[in-house]
Length: 379
Image (cartoon, rainbow, N blue to C red; front, side, top):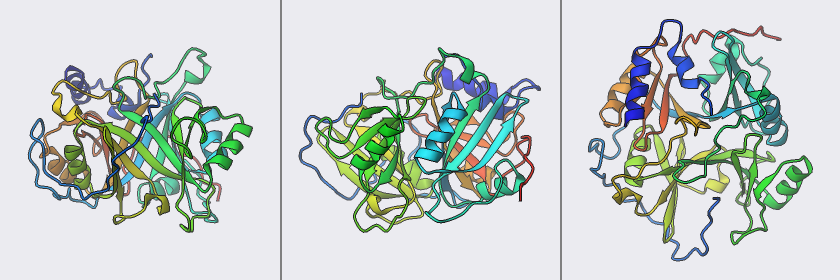
């Protein structure tokens, strides 16, 4: 809570020469555990009762106004010349937009999976590309690069998956994880786990250039998706699944699937879809991993990816019609804000906390003026 309080103070009273947007992205110095056996698997309807350990008791189904839609997952990267080829050339994503802030020494790259055959002719960094980004229906992977990290041989972001880390991985669906693994290995990609290794056969975890885990998941047969890969998951660990699901359902997400095991459970949420087979979905799900019993330990807390020495994963983000009205409703949940809409010098942009202290960016649909250096259109 001390770290949270200090961050809130920073955003309220930033120096005039430093924007709140810069503070969110600023540079700071800096197991795979599969069950030995999975038994008593269940798929059940979720009982949506709320816990009272923290936050307020919000009626289940209370929807935050402004048509909230999941729009981004942010990861910090050390070298875009390595990360962009990995996600674009190998994983089939499209760079749809970028924001350059030379005055603050960082850039943002937004990538998404477009349906096979769909063309994209906007120039990233232009106002046209910005307009597309802030009005799109899909989900992007936002890669944040702080200038100079690519030149430091000893620099590394924290990819997660150590003790009490919250962020787990991103994932891509494919028809054949075995063939996909062979393809990536041939391209020089290293793996945490190949499909035929360990007790859990048929899925794999690759390393991206910064060491983030990238899961390869087999699609359901007959799904009709033609892409070799499509972005399919962001996984974060949660302390109390009831609170987390209530919060994200308030942000317009639907619980589409749940997998219940003896020691842990997985809950999959998505925007704009009904309950169904995640293997057939084109867009990604937010996978919430709950290790049973953490909700009963008052002192337990996951690292959220923004602590000194553990920075890597940054936040997830949602588009809304009106940031101020949405934040008035989010405030009722009682988890607080990292940055209020009028905090700091960047007005109309907010970062709320979810029940685990993960940062959730709230962005106006259609965008605002961010003060980036625009590119010229090539059309």
